Image (cartoon, rainbow, N blue to C red; front, side, top):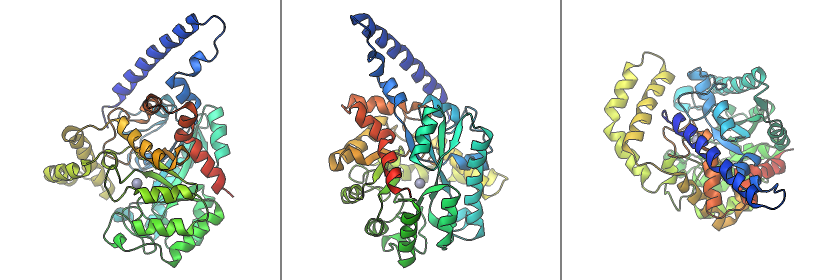
Amino acid sequence: MRNSVIPAALITIFWLATFSVGCRDKKMNSNGPNTSASATDPLSIHQRAIAIDMHADTVQRVLDEHVDIEQQLSDGHFDAVRAKAGGLDAQFFSIWVEPQLFGGGGARAVKRADDQIAAIRALAEQHPETWVLATTAADIRRASNEGKIAALLGLEGGYAIDERLENVKRYYDLGVRYMSPAWSVSTSWAGSSGDDVGATRGLNEFGKSVVREMNRLGMMVDVSHVSDKTFWDIVNTSTAPVVATHSACRAIADVPRNLTDDMIRALAKTGGVVNVIFYPEHLEPGWSQKKKEVDAQIATMVQQASDAEPGDAVHKKLARDRVRQREYARRLPPVKVSRIVDHIDHIVKLVGVDHVGIGSDFDGVQITTADLATVADLPNLTKELLRRGYTESDVDKILGGNMLRVMEAVQR
Ligand SMILES: [Zn+2]
């Protein structure tokens, strides 16, 4: 969202004012030294916890819009300045190959993935004061201790392995630590929740060999976007914990991208984690239908913006998305961070607090929640968790502790 920087700054000022006063009061009321007073306010708890966001699409902005995410940007959802303000310790960057633009395999898909990986590696090399290129839980802990942000890589959709098993290891060697077999378009070897083919397609034999190769190497298998059939094939094939990097609960928001209660139970049984997405369409009941109606209302406007853009197919898509961003914000009801916590609550009630985390999908969606509009607002999630009665230890697990555990279990 484009107007989110000022609210984020105001929220930060409000927090600092509120909680610095709160701490002084506690200290004045105590008879002796009170070292715990400042440690129990939400912002301190948030800053102390290791926060890991399992999914953001920012690297495509770096490539296609040439944004410098070292600087605070006036648009989008993520940059290093706002990540630090939001107390983020680790970001998994989604290496996303859009099959409609780059092919569902082949040289262009491979190059698109490789270019994104190179962009993140270059970022870490050029700004070692900000970033640590990370592949393990220990790397994340080290980055956090040094006050830096760990940059990690996840492949969204298996298009770039180009139906070759040896390419799984190639991407592992380049630093990729999770992969989802399919994004919204099915591959020959894995069905997607986003197309008709996926309704009947799970993993074929090659798909199962991909999962086993990921297990062998120590790459996490991501079920976000896959079809129901593929989900069950993954859970029944994988010998390591399975994750959903950016999904939510179908029991609350009934969209095919979300997980049913049975799926959440099965995923938890593998030892894995459901990382809750921040996207209103997957969070708010009925929002998806309303979005379809808005899409129909703005179709001409979107097409005109695309036609007026002189650049290539990627830039035409950016032009379309800019119209969607503006019109969704105007025409669709705002969704609050409390709705994210409803999904977290639902998962905790089903399988306990050890199997839930966060995966924002920042810069991969045209609209976010009103009070968690960018990464700078992340403390608002902790505030809401604490308000609902979660303990500091619970918050540690939800923000990143559970994913650290899974990474340690999966790595070889
Ligand atoms: Zn996605």
